[in-house]
Length: 78
Length: 506
Image 1 (tube, rainbow over the protein chains, first blue to last red):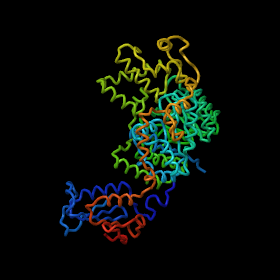
Image 2: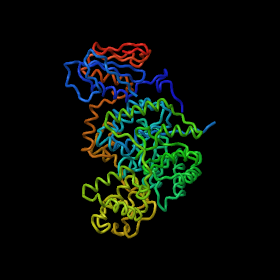
Image 3: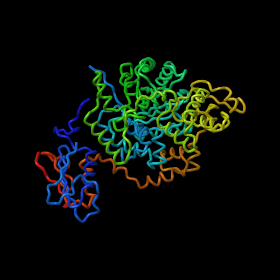
Image 4: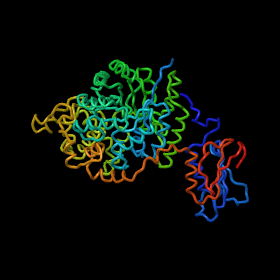
């Protein structure tokens, strides 16, 4: 078997995968309003800010109920 | 130089039939076809009986359209269609004119390989379909249904394999739908069949339900098997096939070569994990060795169907009795292979025998036709008492190819139900009544499967989903020192993407 240059992150890092995206979206959907969330997924760094006047805040977040002034919670995907 | 072992990928056909009740849609499969085409597979399996029928009846997706779209995306790798002899993709026996037109349209729509079999391994019933497939330029792979019985010896399979090659097949497949093969049996069966087919390629297509299939596949290449049928890991195991990546790695460890791009396999596996999560489908898990399967020989999907059907009539506690009765019925019917539709014949009759109290008091029409010879020649003679019970007189019993008992149908279908937009629609009409086709054609009129041609990247999918979430005020994404994955993607005021140097946090 050969490993192609486009396959698993050709520059040596870990590419963003399809399942990473689902994990990221779960984190984003689970974050409370007016929160800033930072996610490290392999080589990728993502930052989201949710509006205050949005829909209801989902429960069960991963500790992102911090105030906007606090340092953003950071999650690193495996 | 190491011997190469080509791999046929089952993700788009048999694997989701086994694990997802055949419910993989065009939306799920088309975005990944281009990548599958680049992996280096020997063939991509796409069409088969259950896939065809579920697409028409339940998914409302025209299988001819699926073939055409997949062919546009898979320009290098042959697409494969399994063909159940004169029954094509249903349980009905079709006349020769329908079967011949179906082979023409398979080739015209983009199928390059036809894997053809008869559920009884009755070779006399395959001359028309194999002959036409060869004539229209399809690569023909002749499949033999493996089963355990006193008559299904290595010589039984070898003799039929040789007949496939004489008909024009360039490949032969040992099709083991219940994973019955053992390492010991393939050591004998592989060389026996290979001797009979000479230079034709010998394929092995087996399932994981007994837990033996991975070992059997790896052993088989040491015993004259040339090509293996596998499924990408999220769609492997259980009632499905051994995982492509695992088999490929172990072939290399054994000193064989594969032409597969391992990086692309990882991407494809990740994609199907994503599909499974997004559409709430199960991911296959390894099955432990289950010796009971060797007794009843039922494919995984069938045993679960039978259990649920027994439950609907309050007989789930009699499953073991049903399975024992199935063994008796199968022997009396001439040791049919346990595969569609014969598996359904056996299971239905076994349940009726138990429920009615008197064996064969009730015999379904389809089984009557089988007993009278309308499905072709059984592997062993049918119990004469049973034949006498069904046949009013000896002249009721017919012999010869199954298609020879059915008059040509295309002209009358055109006259009674036409005109049709195409021969593809004519064939659908030959297989299904108008009430089945009406919703299919209505759905087809508004469907746009070209939308699924785009092989979107994970980052593109993420951006699309983020754009659909109005509650997000800011979204930033960066990748180390390089921003190539989302470079060029449309950026809105709401969602800005910025370049960050590797190591900087956004």
